[in-house]
Image (tube, rainbow, N blue to C red; front, top):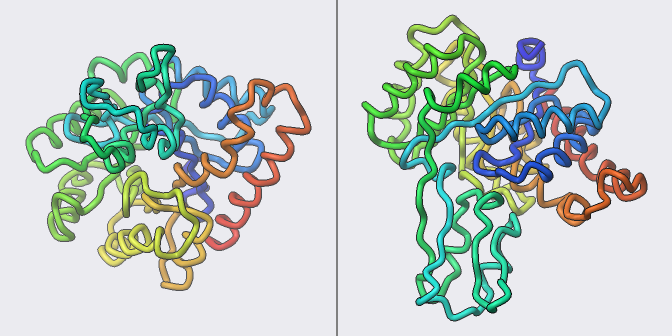
Length: 323
């Protein structure tokens, strides 16, 4: 049961990307990391993505102790954003395509650059490198009542709610909707960019007030979508965020996220932080990217096994340091 892996501090959560709508990539990632020992998967809140993840589990041949979570962002949440190019401003320098971790930006037949929205996760790296300010962002935020009932019928184990924005009414209204739709595990993904430490803690306390103890996960998001590098500095804020919630002693399970990598659980242990698990996205996807991108990935045993060694090392290292 999900409760057991959280209670025993043995949760490794693979973040496929809240905005990642690439069914084939999700299927491959879930097949690979499930085989590597990952036991929790974070998915875009779309029925077809849930089905892709289930196919991945079938390919891995693992039927027990693997759990699916869908992530829901509301307007203003960066995880619900997609990039958009203003072709009139674009000089076709290609910097955006080179930096995009998802390979979501490509040169079209007419030599202009475009965004493949199903792969875009709203990380804003393209925005940061564009010399002409040619990129904008638009929100694909979803209404819980519109998307969750069908997904709940499919069979999931958790819903993650990105409670990052400053608008208090919007946050709590959508949270109430989710609680009415689903009575299982809920996860609150939160950072301190808009609220500060006190505001963040007060928000979580209010959100869990009417929920049974330990039916809620707090995903302490240090630096959202920043985990490309594998060093202690990158993951420092994730550990610092987890410490805030650990010190508050709330009846919740704590996951570290946002800038997480292979050093996260080691640094947490050194700092006396004992989370229920670690959620790793950008880094976990990056280290197997060259294999996942191959068309023959699921059919070529040699290729799959090379990626499996890399993924298993990350999972094993992370869980070992959590014990």
